[in-house]
Image (cartoon, rainbow, N blue to C red; front, side, top):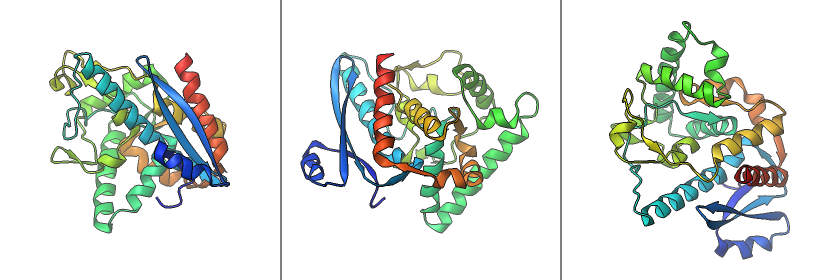
Length: 270
């Protein structure tokens, strides 16, 4: 979006941006299997919403995934994931709070007929999820995914529903450039067949140097002084609609980015 208060910079742009007195550049490195990757995020001296951190977070996750993939390839290990593969598109996909708000903004910016289709698909999936929840799960458990154990438990239950992503059409992601951070960070090696639901063997999931999704979740929790939350993708649009006041809250963009980078560094050191 134009006039974004937070952007990831390429080195060729850094000099020009650094002359802008109203902007602050935050530099940092992420270690990828022993090789440092350098990043710069430019934050304007203005207010920013939680959703404003998502474009740079997506870009960071994308660059890290590409670097990890290249590193594995150079060592003779090949990542199965590629654009057009939809083997994992029936998985439970968690969105951070900022991502849910960003998703709502992006969907509402689509052409009217496309908005209607996406909303219908999301609501249809949401109905199937909520109609099947009463045996074991509460509405709060389905909306908020807070722990690894809870995520694994819900993922197994979600797989049994055999739902495909609302943004998947004929095996192609219709919102690939805006896909969730969880999708960008999910890399596997070996056969893609192992990614399909109900398989006895599990795919070999690549451990990322740092989870940008977790960093975004912790950032939002700190800024809002709440617990870390994650929302199921099919439930994200109605959830965001119910939390519009939270979506409109703002913080200084520089403060937001500085803390985001600090969280990334803290997670790398753990």
